Amino acid sequence: MRRLLSASVPFTGVLGLLALWWAVTAAQVFPPQVLASPARVVEAARDGLQSGELLRNVGLSLSRLAVGYVVGAGLGLAFGTAMALSKSFESYTAGLFHAIRQVPTVAFIPMLVLVFGVEETFKIVVVAKAAFYPTALATYTGVQGVPRRYYDVAEIYRFSALDKLWRVVGPATLPPVLTGLRLSLSRAWVALVAAELLVADSGIGQMMEMGRQTFQLEVVLLGVVLIGAIGFALDRAFRQLELSLVRGAPA
Image 1: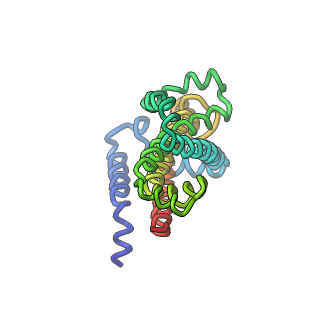
Image 2 (image 1 turned 90 degrees about the vertical axis):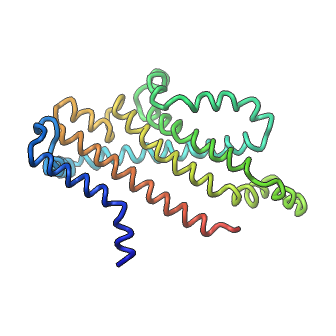
Image 3 (image 1 turned 135 degrees about the vertical axis):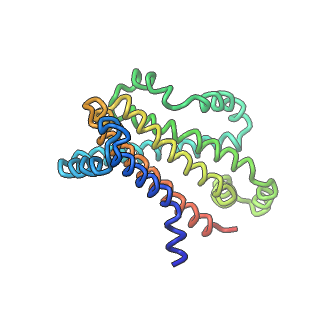
């Protein structure tokens, strides 16, 4: 019973917000054209499921997220490791890296549209850019924090460069790198939705934009609920993966 209560605590705020939403719309504090009721949002979700459009848009958004995240996070891991282990590589790239990471991903959207157009490549590049920098920074910081004595022990056992990465650097940097990967997943999801809102012909963001243009506020609110629910589910799932990997990592 205690475990069940503990698991329900994170949802208390969500349930409270839903209750407030229902109460405000039931009391007609705002006109229906300004704030749609939960019942209208549920109806919009039902209509979207029946037509197949809702699942299609969610599937497209998640597929773009998956491809872009794998590409961006993979490059971030490699770049952060190289920058931490090679002083010459760091001296050539650190300035540009730290300058560009200060610029929000959304600011690059106009330029990326000119370069890649509005097709799938554009959305994947946006996601990859958003995932790259948190991962690279976390990896760089984690690798730099590995104690020197770890490398000394590796030298005694005559580890190859690959063995050092796999058996020394990898386990020692696992917690901060996983935290960076988790943060990059959240940022990539937000960046993707923003890109779909601005320039897209499909996806959750485009569904919301079409709802706005046709004055279907329930569709817009459905998109907001989906974005929050999917983002929350992704973060919780990654958190569980992170805990299991850290517990199972060798000391």
